[in-house]
Length: 197
Image (cartoon, rainbow, N blue to C red; front, top):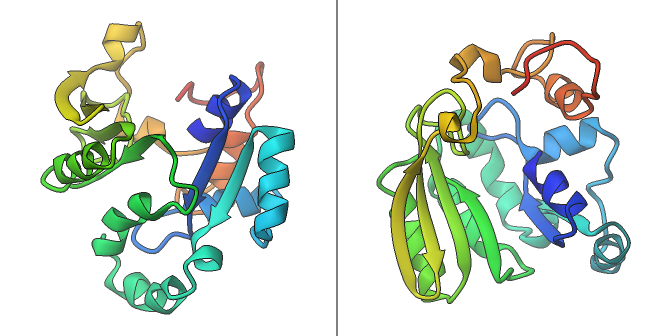
């Protein structure tokens, strides 16, 4: 998970997210499979941020109304407006953010909202529809600096990475829809077999 890598590099991270509603696996599902407690009080989250350089704010704990929308979102099984608003309502109000958006029409709108707030941000969408930087296709990036949004495209090949097949991005040996398979990939260590993605 990118948030863990960024925190390990010395940049404090307040990750805000929830369980899967319209995708195979949400960030909360993976973290819970790794043994992370989702029931942190605000004081415990602040202590975690101070001590570990990262904390996770479980959306239903900080936005209690969202828990009532989850069954409907799960039944719809497609992204809803909550998918697009959630990155904007991180209670930590970070000055910088990296936001993934699967919708090519909504992504620049999110970027403009972040620009209007004066944030520094990257809003990313893989050309393959991923709501993150992709190694299977080029990635469209809206770079938010100051109050301006600059669209650009990056490609894994620019960084010396081979192009992957979409199936290569699936986690571990378990079915790709299970949090333990994603957690297993998150625990990967040098010397273990499997995809480099």
